[in-house]
Amino acid sequence: MTEEYEDVTACQFSLYPLRQGDIDTPIQEAIEAAAAPGLAVQVGRLSTLMHGDEEEVFSALRAAFRAARAHGPAVMAVTLSTGLPGEELVARIQRERVERAERG
Image: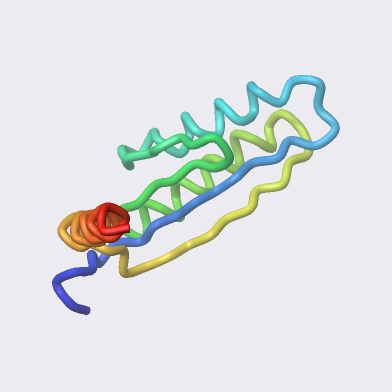
């Protein structure tokens, strides 16, 4: 793996409580359960992102799913990735996009 990529496991998950009057509580508790192991968890509008050691990520996913299902039926959609771009690569890509946009 080149220096431009980090050797971490990344995860994006979305939770869909089914047939529940209150969907906010299962989602909030799933996010809290995922964050408990100490992973950096970033909540988005449609999904939650986290990254770290593979075992930590899978453990956090399991905890999130268990927290959600404690409230009733739920679906969790998960995307896993390895080899994330490092901060320098992301900054370079963003800088190049801005430069292209400025050139028109």
